[in-house]
Length: 157
Image (cartoon, rainbow, N blue to C red; front, side):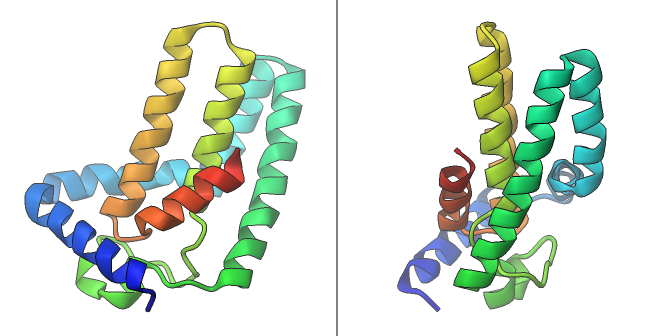
């Protein structure tokens, strides 16, 4: 276990002591849907139809590249998730490596696309809020360390 992971595990435990409730567990589990292939299979055609073919195509190729990049980096680093090291912290459990966070990577890509393609600052705020809440949910669920999130944000931009 990395020394950094020891520190991050204590942060996650402190977070859980401060705010964890069964209701919040359920809400945050629902948020996990936004890190699924099913969500992307709805999002890409919706963007294609509602925003435009160019943006939908760009999003499609970015998501495919992102999936391959994320899988390769996870295999390369092979770092554990918080729920692997301290199972009681995990609201959910995945068996795959944790670094970098694919959810954070996807959130960074989506937020970057919104910021680059839209002039509406309200959409920027919405994109950033979505991305930050998705990143928070991954830490809360015990699926990622903050360093995994940072790695995903960097690899997604």
